[in-house]
Image 1 (cartoon, rainbow over the protein chains, first blue to last red):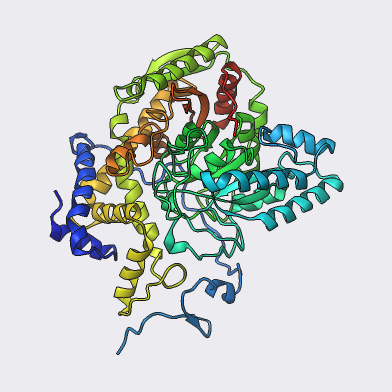
Image 2: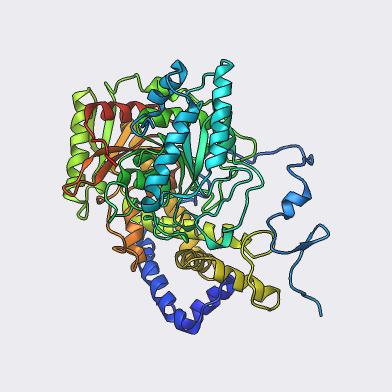
Amino acid sequence: MLTAEETLKVAKLASLRLEDGEVAVMAGKLSGVLDHINQLAKLDTSNVPPTSHILDMGDVFRNDETTRQFDSNLSLANAPSHTSGYFCVPRIIE
Amino acid sequence: MADFSKETCSSLSRKLASGEVSSVEVVKSALARIDRLDPALHAFIKVEHEQALTDAKIADERRAKGANHPLLGVPVAVKDNILVEGGFATCGSKILENFKSPYSATVVKKLRAEGAVILGKTNLDEFAMGSSTENSAFGPTKNPWDQKTVPGGSSGGSAAAVAAGYCPISLGSDTGGSIRQPASFCGVAGLKPTYGRVSRFGLVAFASSLDQIGPFGKTVEDVAYAMNAIGGHDKMDSTSVNKPMPDLTESLKKDVKGFVVGLPKEYFIDGVDPEVRKIVMDAADILAKQGARIEEISLPHTEYAVSVYYVLATAEASSNLERYDGVKYGHRTKTPGGLGEMYAASRTEGFGAEVRRRILLGTYVLSSGYYDAYYLKAQKARTLIVEDFRNAFKKCRIILTPTAPTPPFNFGEKTSDPLQMYLSDIFTISSNLAGIPGINVPGGLSSKKTPIGIQMMAGHFDEESLMTAASAYERGRTFPDLEL
């Protein structure tokens, strides 16, 4: 069972807020899934390599050339806040 | 107005080619049907009336000039996590409610190059995370066969759009069953291609090592036409594979004589609905009558697939969804605060409960101290599942299983317990982990008159055998039309 402290730590890592009332509920739901996942512990994988990509293919290279997909106005069009061609964020230096 | 709701891609294509009907007539009829039925069904998040009619006119003009592609002028629907330039792509999430796509996905460009007419964007579980379309921020889609039941998910809208007769073809994405399970629930054909067969460029990422775009169709032939259009290498997706795309309609003409069809004993466990089991066993008989040999096989690590999936898929999702931070696109909080507070508040306000839960689970399994026990362990277990299939395909050409353990379930039935919802993908998840193609073909109806499908899987890049077997089964069984 995930503790409240562990749950809050994971939320901080994931940049998600949990209200006080949500912590226990979320801990319970995550623990329920983790209990099921813990069945993996009984599987002997001592000599098994990990699979991260399913196909037998190496790195894919291309020439290091810039191409223009679309102009900066289009890149900025979905930004919640922008000015003079830049994305705006809250002030980070006082 | 003429009704084209029963037409398949090929029957419609013939009528368009002969000049019997125009694309404008077909699309007008489809839009009228959507206007009549979709307020209740909610297969679409956004219907593009004007754009669709413009595209239909263009298709008619192209045909007048001599063009004749199988999809030319045929209406299609696209899942709302696939980008169509200038249109919205909400992913079923509040966080992308106002996002407008600056470019089109490769599959969309390919569909349009063939002259397909996109009617609109279909509903989905938020960021394709779910098995019922109940997790959409814009409300659920209803199953056209029985509106008390879910259409499956996450591509529930695309499956329902074909089932409701809006269009013969739609596109979905499948990370753990999100095409095949809704296809089963809605009584349509649905293919998850081999990983790397279809470009993922312009598909909003959920779990990049598992995601694959694929088509729904009224028939297996429709799926073949759609796959012919969207498959193939794309330099914009470095995981797409540079192999020639075969003409899958050719595979439909072949027979299954001499095919060995494997029935994995681990897929016929307690918990599989008896009606589902019967339809799959009947499917084996139908294939046997056409000359296939049926053999029991074993995929011994099947019981671990759901666990492996929920470690790897959530880990990849937690990383892929980091980009939603309220800076470059997506929802930004109005609550004042510093940069870190802005990130957290924007994400918490924008993401729904299931997405937050999966991000937290993924973050946990990747976090220091747990990485080896969960993430690395799951990657190793994935290798064992891959080997299971490699060994199985030494003995058989096709693997036949249920698509989902049950017929469509009712709204709310599994929402309170995430694990129960996750287990509804128990038979589809393994093929995403192994990267192999899988198809759902409608099999029959349950005693409650809701659809039940069968799943077939084949080896990497062997969509041809899959289409041959799926088509042979489809010819050998009967499946009723839905009257709406």
